[in-house]
Figure 1 (cartoon, one colour):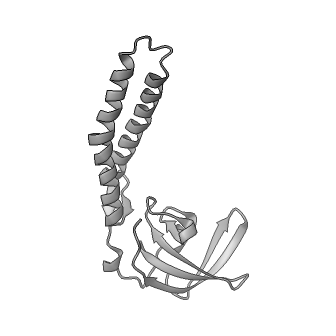
Figure 2 (figure 1 turned 90 degrees about the horizontal axis):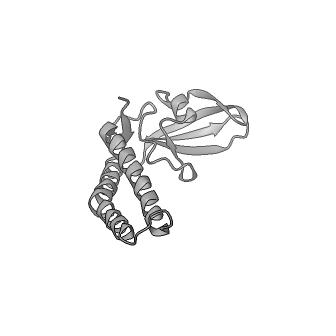
Figure 3 (figure 1 turned 135 degrees about the vertical axis):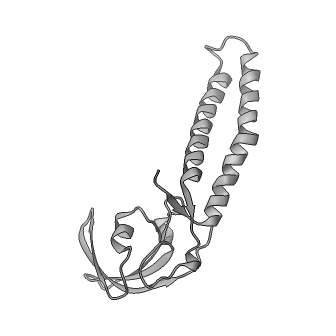
Length: 162
């Protein structure tokens, strides 16, 4: 079973969502299905079919969350050394071609948000960066072609949870 690294706040958020689905949403949808069933002919009962579809989607999400939480490995990046790139490291890169400075923080797949500079530990870039040190060069094959970056800085910056 492959562990899924994540922040404690993400673990709590997913646990809360799972609990709400099981204790609030599941009984609510079951009630809607029962009420729709009482209306008679199920073949032409749009409310019944919509509720059954919602129930299927909800059960799939419950299964997904149960799996993720069972495999969760809660990590506090503030307690990790950041001399080398690891989970929770904020990495400042310099694009060798353009001299552009790019900053990414390596997080779990559940926290990933590239537009905010949060990249999944499973992403090709993060995999290429893991274990590297300041001053190292990293080469990554991207859809746009081969890119080379210099690692300018590795540091820990507290990660805001949503």
